[in-house]
Length: 633
Image 1 (cartoon, rainbow, N blue to C red):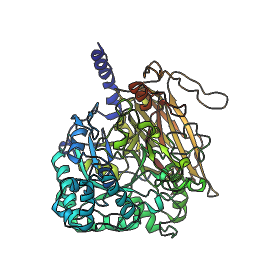
Image 2 (tube, one colour):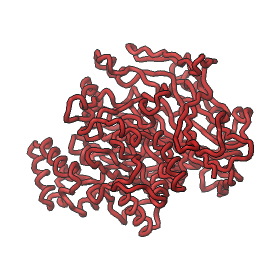
Image 3 (cartoon, rainbow, N blue to C red):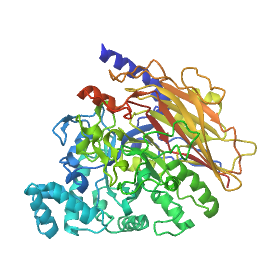
Image 4 (cartoon, rainbow, N blue to C red):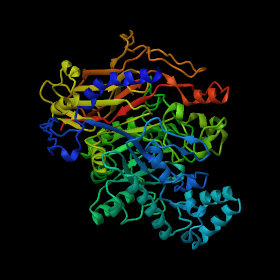
């Protein structure tokens, strides 16, 4: 009976999927290659070849090839990571069977480039490793049962110093070749995309400046270079120069994804370069081109907004990690918050653009897991943690997720979020199509659920357009998608937005679809406002203008909820009621689910735990779209 109910639910959702995703499933190679031409008002002139499919995956997964994962006990490599993402059952690092409820569409194995492949080489007594004095020393320590001591030496002599303790290009080449080989093995154009990538792990003074580097290309090009590491430089400008060198040498393409700004000590989106220089136009243009998207949510907190920066936003206090920076050596200073959160960066980008003519923070947003287990999991009832110590167990909730020098700065395992996913609107499931969607910022991030979300902006959307069953074709015909730009407002016109969201077919109903607006006034000051645009259950805003909560059906003890509240689909056309054609602005969508049980509630039931009151047992999962910008020029 349960199977029958699920089948009926999926069948009922098919018409809704057609409305959000379009009807075409034709491979890109068979479609007419007509480009989407934009007029100066930001509308599409042709729509024969538009992205009609949304693909879900992870742009940030680590395996044992990352030294901080492998030296800490992770044994699974890229091969297991891909097989798991494809839906196979694998045995976890702690010996537990693990399987996704649904396969992914794409995956980036983004292992740290710093001493890449160290742990697997120790495990296999690799001759290349044994030729290096430091590598042999750590190998012998691990084989003698002193693995924790060897790991501690690597941290103190390498990852926290910025100096390469091994300095072996031969080791790097061997590990990089293995990673490329695995990606090429599992890449299946049209079915599953295995991107070649790695993580550049700059952490000056414990502040997170990490970027994931993703190649559009196959191994024939990516294999011509060795990954750039923070041992080479901790300055992202040097990374961008390396990226340019790669493209010049190979004719390929590569992009970088900054992540986890909330643990950057304000450095990720600071008002000056890492070297302390003020931005100029060349820097702003280069950064926007090299880093078209950012990671807004992952297990180590969500970096969309902070309640201290957005006090009027009742949903800004979501999975906030603000005790310390990534290194656990500095308490978070209030003055560092603006450089750590995406919404504030988007606002500051408007001010910089007004001054320089270019916006360094013109980025789209995705989610990903940053899991260090080779197991990318985001389902609350199937969360395999971030590290081997946070794989399912009765103790993981109290594991120190960020060990700190001061007890009050320690962040514990229960604060980890089962997050997130990258969603990409593309024409087909190939490296080329997904990469190009990332470049044009036609992406969004979720904290786990696979909800379908659309956002189009234009000047002539009408209320009836929200009822059109081919939203994709209509949206591109009359406007620009998420990631796009509107400009030169027609006289007397305010921007209109066509927005739609559909619930995850295997998940919870939706509460509301909000639009977050940021703008720059005539005095050069930035502002923000969150609008509730469309919601479920016929609620009406109160006298204070706030929409009442949707309710809460979560039974934390029995770990259940019901879809008796919320909606399966939300659609509307919204016009900015406070638009000023002279003011720069951005708009992005935020879609909230109804409350559901959190992974901590599942653990409490599974292991018979009585968790402290500060441990949350329910969660309001959500999605964040890439913005649409308005430029008066």
